[in-house]
Image (cartoon, rainbow, N blue to C red):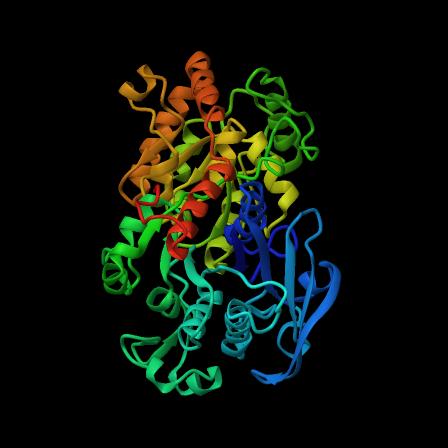
Length: 491
C-alpha cells in the first residue's frame, strides 16, 4: 500500500502541538506494517534545511503567488520516511510559526501557502508530478491540508483515494470568500455544499466534504463532533458523512517517550523499579524552585494555555490544591491573560507554584517524569497525547471526561480500583469545583502509597503504541481503495 501523508508540521523538525507528534510517528509505524509511506511538507526553514539528500522531482514555475516552486524528495532525519518538500521560498521561508508571524498575527497569505500544499498533494495523487511513485491513498491532516481533498475531487481521474483526519475541529482555516479565485478551483466548489462556510472559504470543510473517508483521533471525539456542543458549527456536515467517519486513537512513540530509555532524565525507571521516578521528582522540584518535599504531590501541566484546555479551571481550583498540600508545575504558552494569571500565581506562591512560559521539549519530558499527576482538564479534547505520556511515565492523568480522554483514562472509582482497572482520575462538569473535587480524590489516593503504586503499575501497563493504530489505518486504507471487502473499521 502506497500512502502519501500531507501535513504542515512534523516532529522533531517543527512542532506547535500534537499534530507534529502524530505525523512524526504514524508514517513510520505504517512502514512497520508493510506500507510504502511518504510525507509531503511545506518548505518551512526548519523542514527545508533538515530533510536529507533532497533531489528535485519537478519544477512548477509560478503558482499561488510564488515565482518559482520546486518539489524535492529527500529523507527525514532520524527516520525511514521519505519526504517531499515544496521549495517555495516566497511562501514558506520566513521566521515565525507555520501559521503565524512572531507577533502572533496570522500570515496574510495562508490561503495561498496551504492551498499550494493541497494542490501539490492532489497532483502527486494523480501521478503527474512524480511518475516514479503514485500513491494509492493521500492522507491529509487537519485544515492545513484539507484543500487536498477538494483539488482531488476537481481533478479526475485522480488515481488515489483520499483520507482526511481531523486533529482539532475548532481550527478551521477560514478565509475571505473574495480570495476563493486564488485557489484555482472551479466556481462550483464555492457553494454551501462545498467549501463555502457562512460567507467564507473553509479548508476544514473542504476536507470534510470531499474526502473519501474521514477520521478523527479518538472514537469518542468522532461521536462528539456530530453534536452541536462539540461540532464547532460543522456538526451538520459531520452528520451528513456519518457512514464515512470513524475514530482511530492516537498512539505514543515509544522511542521518544519511554522512562527506561529517556536520556534527558536525571534517572531512568520502569514499572519494575520506581526509584528513579522519585529522583526525577526531586530534580524537578529543585529545577523549578519548588519546595523539595517527597510527600507533596506535584501536579504537572504541559499545555497550550487556552480556555479549550481548561486552564482557567485550574486557576479556580488552585487555592484548594495548595491548601491540601499539593504543588503545581506548569509549562505552556498561549492566551496572554492566562500566561499573566499563572505567572502571578507563581509569584504569590513561591515554592508551591512554578510556571515556565514557552515550550521546551526536554523540559516537557522532565516535568512529566517528575510530576505525580499530569492534568488535562480540557473542555474538549480530540485525543490528547499528554495523558498518554503520563501513563507511560507512571504519572497519573487527571482529566475531564471528554473526547480521547474518555478513551484512555479509567477513573479511580471504587469498582475500577477493586477490579484493578483504574489508571487516573476524571471529572465531568467544566467547573473549578468539579476539578477541585478530583484533585482532592487524587491527593487522598496519593496519601495511601500501596494504592498509589497499584494505580501507577496499571497505568504503565497500558499499551497505546502506534503499531495498533497503524493496523487500523491499514484496514481503513484497504477499505477506501477497495482492496478488500468493506467492513467496519475498528474504532
